[in-house]
Amino acid sequence: MKTKWYFFILTIVTVSVFINNYLNVHENTPFKVGVLMIGDSRQEKLTGLKKGLKDLGYEENAIDFEVKNAKDDEALLDNKINELLKKKPALIVTLGGVETLALKEKMEEQKITIPVVFAGVAAPKETGIINDYRSPGGLFTGINNFHTGLAGKRLELFHELVPSVKRFHILYDKDTEVSVLSLENTIEAAADLSLQILPTNVSDPNFAENLRRNLQKNDAMIILPGFRIESLIKDISQFSKKHKVPVMGIYGDEVEEGFLASYGTSFYDQGYQAARYVSLIIQGNSPADIPVELPDSIRFIVNPKIKDELGIELNNDLMDIADFIDDESEAGQ
Image 1 (tube, rainbow, N blue to C red):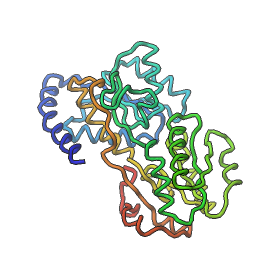
Image 2: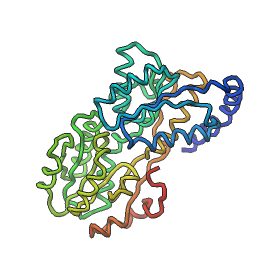
Image 3: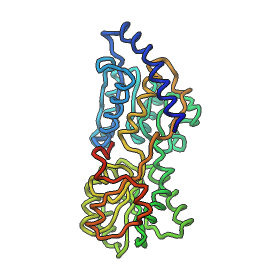
Image 4: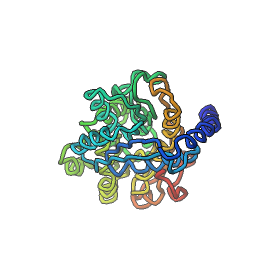
């Protein structure tokens, strides 16, 4: 962590000289950055990105953002990518895995060579986005949010947090590769911990009814990464409260919405961290040579109010290491 903060401070110092020169030379020609997002749920990443760039010394008029939002429609995403590529930005920032994979495919088809920073993607090497974590070796680099790697740890934490839980319903998306990879890690962890898990595919239109029919006393739910799951957070929260089933999520805003707990790096933090990559590429560095980073911070957040609503007891030892939603006015960040 100290090494990362040293790098961050060093970047601020060195980039300030470049920015001053850049603004003097290009005062009326802001750097054009394209932003690709699958839906509104990614907005906090964009907020974090802009704040990170501001903290690095970039004035508001130094960068011109061209934002394309597919509004949670995979079919529309293809059109948004085409629109963005026609604008010919100097750099593209993708705000998630589904956007990054779709953009990579389109750029390869059209033989387009624009540098790309992904602001938080799970398993970028395993999904073929990069060749190597230290030397990405292509047009793509950015933040590995490690959500796939944390899947097993989420199960372990949740089991320790709520000892009364006997079975864990694992919500995953069969159509999303990182979600399937996360499920594999969860299955492996469950075997090591001798825990019973029941995978539930959210791409099945009847998944909620199937889940309801299979519920038993002392059951819990854990969600895995996937944009389709992210779009269902409110529904899952309502289901949790109605059936008195605790849920472990990934992001702080899910805990604000009604999940019992979450474990992962936030959208805001992923965007903020990605700002360093944008700055490095603006300075002329190649994405092929910029190592992919793990998250600067991973947070374990608990909502005590949900504990009381569900009528469950929590492990006090785990509560000692958790952040509480009441103390987190910006828990989703």
